Length: 514
Ligand code: XMP
Image (tube, rainbow, N blue to C red; front, side, top):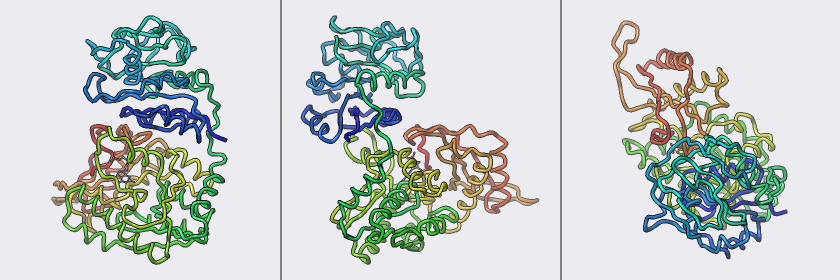
């Protein structure tokens, strides 16, 4: 059965993934597609999915910039419901002959919208709604056959419907939690306007993906890059069930793992019905990184070296296919999302490998978001420690030691990181946090240990809340917990004289320090 689907046209907005996520949380399938999509391409999508509607995302541009993204006007005559959000709202208005102008007063943050007509997307809403706005252009006028559904103090047309068509625009962002009834608005669109059924669930995913793997690789040898993180572990477990005897899982210990992590991965996967290879590559990674301080250089070297080790292992078992734990956001980010800036070169085992020759690459999780992967992992019976595992970067602790990496520094960081993990888990906060870890900064500082002066390392604590890692807030951890972590670190690790708490959100900071 083809799942009911809403396509999200990507105009480069930071909340684009969030729109797709919210749709899927309502059990309707969604895919992010290029804003330049043509009706013919939508028809192609309709062959494999039951496309019931389109959402036009927000975007960083002004509709007046010479390079501003446009929509193909035929999209609005395609007989599919459409919902434009922010930039999407403005671009629809512009396309049908409305007036869009730079606003005199920009609106950023919470605003109150007066709902003039609670119909369609706005059905069942209050007269005043708290909404999240972020715009500098505004729709001021529309040809008179179209209906104004809401306004704010600074925005005369904050929501509209095009005549009798199921085509709506909202100047605000219903996908952001700060829009109080945002989910109700999206539900109205999905279920009332588009007539979707909530039929996207993980129930038959395991069976379907095992069939897909089998038909892709037949009876040939397959290799999977296993880091022990949730994505590669889940992909490995699915593949082990499907093609066990032909599967070799390669776990590369690059020396930047957390305390006991290599043992944990080995213990978990050694007994799976497949070949398991753990490669101790600690020394070769450390050697290549000697005296390297530039974060991007570190990342590049680690990525390259990883591929080399992996190639060697692939050759040994004559693998013709590569299986990876690539998930949906990885694929979209490296695909057509050309309007979002590259901040750092993420090295992921899923980012493997550009130069190794395989007949093809198999990606069983390529359509899933992280929370969907966790659901599948639970169904597979993977240990709780993997299902609930914090995201951990491919380059591991190497991007949490600022400056040159040494074994001594890694050892200090491992100890500090273990203390952070223990204390956060002991007080039951782990489930509410996206990540909680230690960073070893390149700064040294003076302290007193016993009665003597000490000059030692500084550990920073990075504890963040997030849903997707695209934005994150530092967590407001109670002082007594921070105090406990700090005291344990300086008491138990002689080389550390100072502990600081990183109170920067993302943006402007990133989650990892490098
Ligand atoms: P940043 O530091 O970019 O991190 O805010 C966002 C999320 O991604 C993780 N991260 C990585 N994951 N390979 C990965 O697989 C990488 O190279 C990498 N760098 C950062 C980071 O831990 C956070 O969850």
